[in-house]
Image (tube, one colour):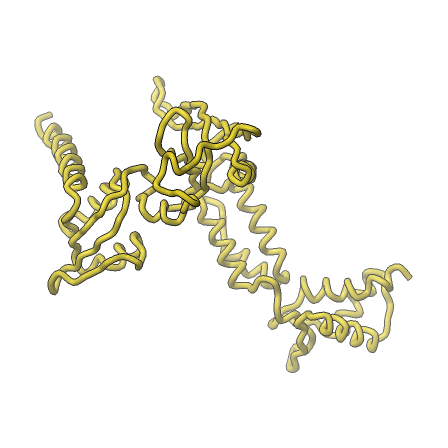
Length: 335
């Protein structure tokens, strides 16, 4: 009798895990599935149960043809949406292989077995550059709570260095931070906050953080004291203005670019900026962004195809970098 009470749930489970538009289940399959779970019933009771599920709101359709039967037509997530989530996890360097597999399994369980198998055959985590930091999963949760509660955190930040034996070693330093936001940018997850020793913003990669603790009762320093933001910390604005998450002062930047760079420029700056035609071969762009080493590195990849019109400080940084590179190669000529 107990199993009979579960009949409706077993039918729903079968439709959820085994059916889709290309893999409908017929009455015989439903009856066999129920029988394997200790439930015997008549066909008409299955029809009745399916009607109850449809009345409750489940989008169950019947298809006719060589493979006729019932299938669940609508789900909380469609196959394409799950594929996007799996691809995002696969491509995220800051998520370890173990956590990547865990998250993808969670996503795939939202589909039927057939759909999940199709995605699983196309998305692979192996042989991709991934962090080995398993703590990041828990750090995200702790930082969420700390930011929401307005508490400071204490953490260890790890950097790789070349040691005395010409091997890669780790250099660790302890920091006390007022956390303001977490930002995903350029395949990495970052924490933006204030180190209590300084009057500016500090940017830390989450995959380099170890041994993070919430300092309950120790309030964060107001971000209005160390940033241009007053009412709320605008993480989207911060990420847009800071190239590769390098710190720097925001200035009005104007560039003259070759026309074939329009896609790269708009991808980097966004479309809500001033763009204008200079001549048949060039266009200009103007935006308020942070002038920093990240911006310099991005500009240098285009060589003479991009010219800095403003500000002078950015021109000086580029000239300094060019002189530095020139000096390195000139020194090699005389060796």
